[in-house]
Every structure is written in C-alpha cells, then in structure tokens.
Length: 193
Image (cartoon, rainbow, N blue to C red; front, side):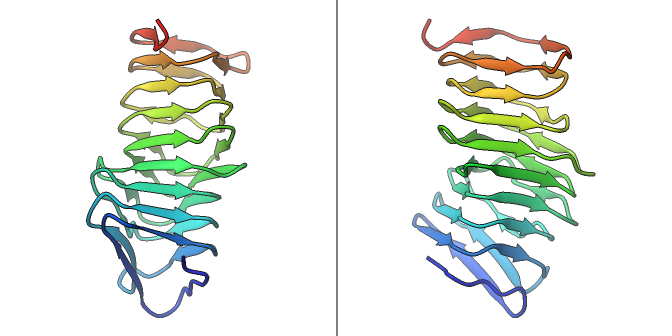
C-alpha cells in the first residue's frame, strides 16, 4: 500500500500477478516520468481519485483495476486495449471523460454507485458492463457498449438508451429512462431462466 503520490519526479510501477493499492489521489501528469503498468493478471486499487493525462495506465489480459473514487481522462485518449476489468467500488464513484476513454469490461460493485459525468470525450465499453446487486449506474451522457449488458439486480438511470448487444437480467432489475426511449437491438435473457 502506498500512502503518498507526487506529481513531480519519477513514479513508475509495474504489477505482475500480485496487487498494489494507493491511498491518496493519484494524478499522472508526465508522459515520461510516470506510469502504472501491468505485465500479468494482477490487481491495482485506487482508493482515492485517479486522473490520467497521458494514457499511462497500461492494462494486461485478466488484470483488475478497482476505483474507489473517481476516474478522469484529461488530455490523451485513455485506451484499455481490450484488456482488464474496471471495477467501481466507491459509494459514489464517477467517470469524467474530459478526453475519450475506451474500456474493456466494466463492473459496478454490489450496493455501490457509479456516475458517468458529461465531458468532451466519448466513452466506449468494448467488452461487457455488469451491474451487481443493489448497485446504481447513472449516466449524464451517451456511451457506446460493444459487448453484453449484465444486470444482477442493479439500477440504471439515464436518458435515451440503446442496447445493441445481449442483455442479461440476473435478478430484479430497474431501468429508468427519464421519459425517453429504450431500444433493445438483441436478445433479452434471464440467467435464472
């Protein structure tokens, strides 16, 4: 566990199959002196806010990144390159796409809350999104979902919604459209039959 982070100097971390966690807010402000990278299927936990200016969070197949607070991409497009899972574990986590963000898989932990804030960048989820039991996902802007939508008893609040992939309902599900349209482009299924 790291209890301090400086935006000056050299801060470079590599995670293999183990795990590391950061207690303070982490802000990547240098394209050369700061980087957090996986080289195997380990876990990184950001307990405070995480801000990435130069796409220096490098993912790996099977890795997990836990966000206990906010995730902001500021200048350079953040691209997870089809690898890893972003898990939002905070009571009021958020994503702010000042620059564009392309995730792989996204999960909202049970009984936790995630808000997608408005921003100039686009947000793409190349894999699947999963809302776990009692979680809430609120969106202030449209996003692109290329994979499946799995709702295991969460609540989704947004405006107009389009689901192009498979929609799996694993438990009692609430979808709130705020008087806008909901379009399902593929199969709606229940994991419970």
